[in-house]
Length: 350
Image (cartoon, rainbow, N blue to C red; front, side, top):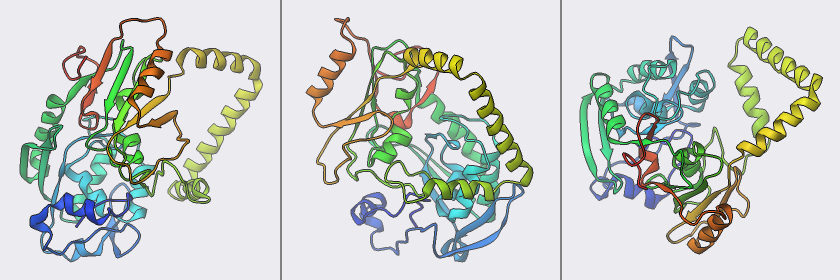
């Protein structure tokens, strides 16, 4: 069973590539977070556990996946794999009721503990966890009870794929492969170094985006469905306790009053701050053959082009006073986590 969570079903070609030719003759299912699901209980954190019906019917559940950094749970793998076969209600609760742990975090937060409970409830105790290199070749495989080996595998991830923060570079290049199938994935997993670089740095991400914009049911990057924000707000409120709703409203009103009370001063400070900290646009160098087009206007200052010469000219305009540029390259950004304690050159190329 493919476990895409709210990302939507992959196309047939992508599915075959994912599972490999040896598994094509098997019965292949793709999880749908809105259908063929059943509620089996609730965790101690109050999260309703709504899971794929076929998983519940199975005699043995084995997870197969990787252990790579992400924002929601710090790292994927282990119990987080359970999220891929949950219903939309469960996924919303996990995202809205827990603070995200941050890219590459290894701490034991409530989100991870909640996922541990869910994994045990759906009997996801056995797992095959892989680490791959920039060419998608396996370099380490862990098998068995992931509750026993996950922390050791996580330590390996942090040691093998750590990279320096992109400070002091004139140009930062982030290669989004192998999570560059869509603009949605690139935004979620491929541009982390570009979000932490200096305001004066030129920013470039390399990605194919062969599936175009892509899809995420909970946090769509573009082409938001009608009334999506309103529905998302209503869903968040439905998951809150009455006291939490009152506290949120009170906080917003207090902030609004304070902003209006000192509007002029705040406007001057904001203008000054923005002039000092606003980052340069992100140039998306799109590689390969493009079947799916990208929109002409993309949020978050992303500008797509298939011309490297155009990007070079843009960098020249952004760095007009320099004849020699310090360039920091992250060769496989989705696999790398940023460690502020190391120097340039240990995990990225200059």
